[in-house]
Amino acid sequence: MKNFARKCVKDLEAYKVEAPQYDIILNANENPWDFPEALKKELCDEIMKTPLNRYPEACFPELLGELSDYTGVPADQIICGSGSDELIAMINQSFMNPGDTAVTHTPSFAMYQIWTAIADGQFVGITDKDGHIPDVEGIISAAKENDAKLIYLCNPNNPTGYLFPRYDIVQILEETNALVILDEAYMEFKGSTHVDLIENYPNLLVLRTLSKAFGMAGIRCGYCLGSKTLIDVMYKVKSPYNLNVLTQKAAVIALKNREKLLDRLKTLNAERHKMYKALRDMPLDSLYPTASNFIYFETSKGEAIYEAMKKNGILIKFFKGNEAMPASIRLSIGTPEENRKVLEKGIIRWKEKSH
Image 1 (cartoon, rainbow, N blue to C red):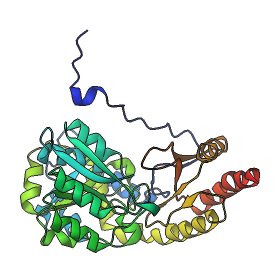
Image 2: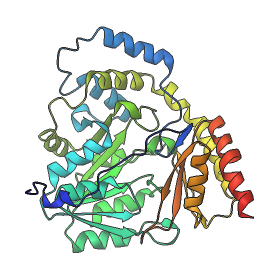
Image 3: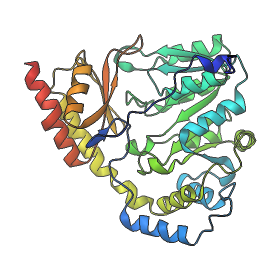
């Protein structure tokens, strides 16, 4: 039978997610707290008043208004998508021609490379320096040598938790001709943003999401901020009704109640500090500081820890290792009770066995 797949797609592996059949799920950097019951009831009331036989708002004016109020960016400089994944796809559809190059440091978010491949582009990953410090000069050199169209910077970085200093971001913006994609999916956990840079840098797009700090991964809502010129181009490739009614209503309610939702991060950050302190006493190869809701560490016993955790009903993220990173684990921070069980049932037991 004739192979109908595009050449740039046929060799890709399908992105598969392990079924969440575990008591504690700490593998996807989700917020451990569900949307509050009172807000769920408010959402139900809104849905009851909404006709489902009609298409949703195609350009979501109410949602854009709330996002503008939250970010300080004008509504006509914001576009929404079904999570950051769709926005990354839209960026590639808008700006990447076949053969164009995208650059980032590695390890970083896997979807950058996947969407570059789907766009029939070339992907260049610059391996981090010791301590998983991104090689900024290497990124700039690669962008110049390859006349890069896009540069991806995940800040804080997934999976390492590294936080780019502002001067590094500015240097990359000023010393390359590329469109810089600053992915701030985990921004709220650190409380620092560089979205104000879009006022002075027309080659910058900033990605955000409600999946992480807002605890709404299930509704799939992300947004992108940039100059009106760039955002207008992205609207040309946006699907007409890419955000359903439920997503739009839930996102508006979340943003109107953002102080309540984001206040929970105080507890999460305190839990991250306790978990990090506990991990420092473990026989790990490397443990990295983090500015996000997860902790990344490297260990030759990574697979053994991963399997031991699963036997105790705990799912974490295990990386087998490659030229950019040795065998490692990314541990999302859960509720205080979940974190206690991780230490008691998983990590502490593994530590005892290792001695």
